Image: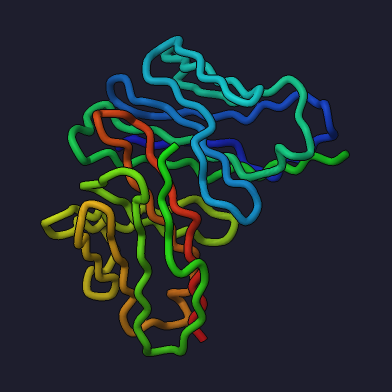
Length: 116
Length: 116
């Protein structure tokens, strides 16, 4: 079945460092891919998404490119801030899911701590 | 953006009692809602898909008699943990997909359940 593999954390960086959080997936067809973020004490929020190959999702300085050839959707940010400290989840929605069956397949999450 | 609320945000109960958690879509209608359980430092585990006007669809290994789901209206789904035990202590999260074929899901802020 479909699955998502996400790099394990925790990741600790200094402010202004470059961030990469790896995410690879296994799925049939062309799933939609997502990054969600969970800030301390808050609910999950959609950070960015991509729905087809070579699409680049971007938001708040974060980017991820849908790579079909490597089945990857790595999250990157050129210069992290303390406020980016959170848990990041990679997820996919199966291409075969239709109608109301829109459940997401989740990675395990990567905790990011950014120090000043 | 769309908002999903959960109530209560946290609850402490005695072993053997039942606890009801509400999930509401505040500014949109949701024929489907998802219930997740999140363990500390782990990913989200999909428990069930709540369907308005019909029975919920439970994931493998989730006891439907233990976790009762009722999708009473297009804006409300409830999860009742029956005869709660300490091992049911967890963070419960609901989500609702955006209508109109979008891939986006909106998440509630979660409910922390502690069973003594």
